[in-house]
Image 1 (spheres, chains in turn purple, blue):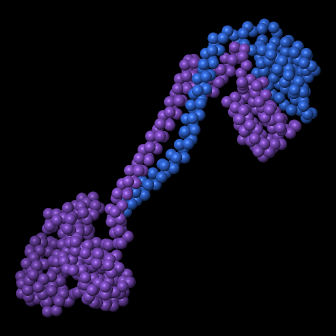
Image 2 (cartoon, each protein chain N blue to C red):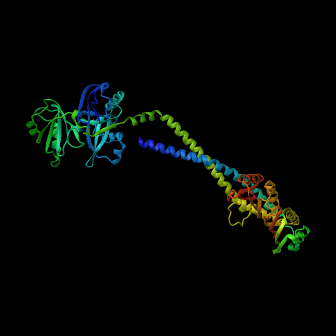
Image 3 (cartoon, rainbow over the protein chains, first blue to last red):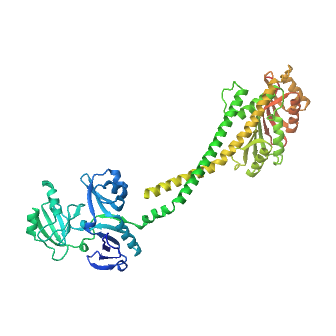
Length: 400
Length: 146
């Protein structure tokens, strides 16, 4: 795997940068020039931000604020940052004790680099702080020193840039940081890494000023940091970058589509509600009509069928014929089954306006045709599920 | 962003599901409503007729012996030889069993009975192996208030 590391100052023009290409076997190729000259096809790309341009701070945050991401975090740390909150890119790195560790970067500078890199085809990269690439071990602080200024890494996720100093005088901010440490949490020593030639200070003078032992750790350069060193401050992926832009462009269309869908759904719901309401109202009216005609009725399940039976009874009581009587029914049925071959009609039963025909050796299509014709005559005809596959079919007929 | 996209996809899927379901079920509900409208009109007609029939004075029920009348009619129709059994479980209800009778003759006999206000209430007609002949079990009632 290859890693391309770019040293990017967020306050400088993003047209050129120092870079190093690292591969698995530790071989490094370094360069300095325009972005168009950067090596292609690196598996990973890291932007290394100089120490003074990254502010790492601790804050006590609710869990929801961590999940909310950059914009909310920027406001959560507004008392600790300078300028407009919108100008800062704040990312959550992890926790130390009960505190969240946040990294603050210049949003505009980062955006400029993002656009510049996109122009040369680099759309996926992670952002690293130079400070968190510096080696660090448990009870020791690591100091990177250029001869005039530097930075100190005090923990796995904690680091800060220092103010200026010289060969005899260590930075005041470093001295202040050490003085602020309580006895238990004070480091045992400082590991001093030089980041430039002739940067080594007067160690005895520094020790005397800081009141702590200093170990000369040798020279260090961001180019030589191990591939797996550091903690990403931000991750850029092209897959999701374009979506907010596209979403903002499509906002009007989305609103129109959404309103149309809501109107359509509303119309559908109104139509559905009206239909269901009418259905319920008709059923209630029919029940009420039946009960008004027959107040003694115990239960009304199918008012039309029950009324039909009552009407039949009333006709018979009055000595009048009914369409559900045997003779009118057999007349209609006979006219529709007369085309059947002799001997196929085996049994005919009749009771209370219901006639059942059992036919044999008839194909299913013929039975269906009979049923259809009976229905056309105004009768309710059904073919029984009893199989026609055995050559036997049962047709039930009643007055509809 | 992922949550927003997922939420939009879930809402869209739900909307499509509801739309398809509603569109599929709506014709059925509409057909039900149309059918119910027709049923309601018919129910009203039936109710009106029932009210009219209630106002009609029921015909006087004949006091003649229904069993004897039916048997005499069978004899005059030439069906007496096929009459296997004739019972009168009630004064106005008679059950007859024919062993083998030509169906058209039997049907003409039923028409003749009907003209005398004797209505066929139930029957079971079974075809016999000889074409045109059937065995019949039938119940007749006298028309009028039972």
